[in-house]
Length: 452
Ligand code: ADP
Ligand code: ASP
Ligand code: MG
Image 1 (cartoon, rainbow, N blue to C red):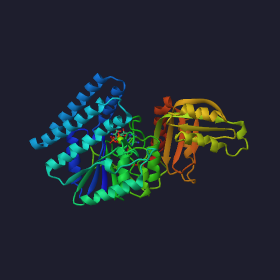
Image 2: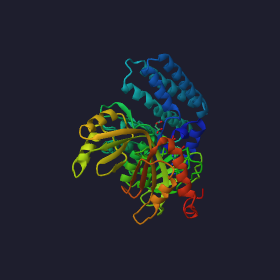
Image 3: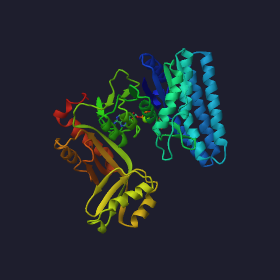
């Protein structure tokens, strides 16, 4: 069995849903199909929630009407028969009736807010399953809320997900296509929750890992993982193969094509992940697996909104236990640290979640001196196979960035990652100069990648 996930743009127009059906039918494997909300819907639902929270019910009503109109037009083109359209209209009326009731409950709590945001995926999956029904295709819709679980820290509960999913699936062995929602789940209080923005990728790999799928395919609007951010850098090209480690680093350090945690469950069970383009299905895309060809530098990514914290202690001189105390503070506030550099008397760390920055600083000040934080920083991450015998990679990178101030460098933690911290105002320049220097400058590098 395979798991195929289609993102927002891939389901964002009626004709795209028609193409998904063709893609599904062109492949004989049984599949679990994970769908995102139609593009723009999650943002629209979040905006409705924001308006309600700001006590602007008039604005919320206008936004809600606009969104409903969008769906009413969408179904007119999605279905070909009066019966199909009627079913579609029922789905839209039911779900928007529910949304209206949700935003009417006062006070509007986080619980309602999460239920509201979940409606994007609930609508897209119901509409798509009704479309397959209209066409007479064999399919069933499973609610992700029946098996997708997170713990109190927002982390997926792998064993529970597997147990529940395997039981549910055993009832549908006659169905060719099993549809479910990406992104949404339940938390330990049994409330509706989610896997954070872009979380449908994560759903797909959690399912793929749980059922030990033959392959997980992430269908999106680009022909695979590119060597650099195509939104910022002019010439980029798709990478044919990545290892799990390389792909995980790129996703974690900002390659938006994958939710940061996507690779973990797939890697755990060695399920290959293939990135494919819905608009160009014939393109080979990117295969992420255990093995890959032995290339040096594969790709560059950038992670935004980073805060750097500089910690000093003269008592660190010859002291043990200092780093433990530092990291206990971050642990206390459940704040992951991305980059670390140390000298004899100081430690610099970066975080991307600065929600608890003030409390973290106060706790650190109890035993260390802090220099002023640097806000609005960017981690530039270069990913590839940098085994110890590969010479000159750091030189190439630093030479390319010689005109850009670098605050931190991290190299050697893994053989796949060289990270640098710069101010975000230099991000576009850094990505572009690295792109030219690492992928286009040397002819020797060119022919080992897909021709750009
Ligand atoms: P979906 O809605 O299908 O989940 P996303 O918008 O989340 O799609 O992810 C696809 C987008 O990721 C692409 O359109 C592209 O602009 C962006 N992206 C950023 N970095 C990369 C990269 N290194 N390779 C490919 N795409 C990238
Ligand atoms: N719809 C959700 C979002 O926009 C999840 C996803 O698309 O992956 O973040
Ligand atoms: Mg996405």
